[in-house]
Image 1 (cartoon, rainbow, N blue to C red):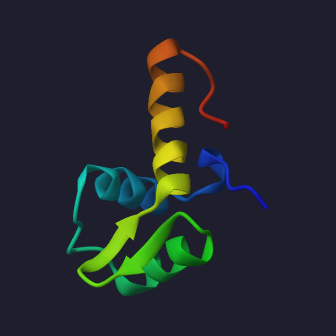
Image 2: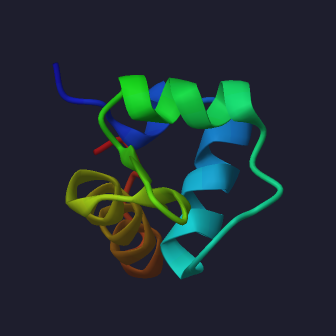
Length: 73
């Protein structure tokens, strides 16, 4: 199952955007686990980090917003 941006809660969206910029030590454990289950982030030796799928989702949303398109993808 593919997760779309609008499938995520506001907290999940915010966390993913923050992780896209780098480490997010304030990430709540339950939220991090949820994003791992969705396949958008992964547990790494230095903490949870965004993976390729998560990064593509964030970048797609940012590009759609810049172009004035729906962020449904």
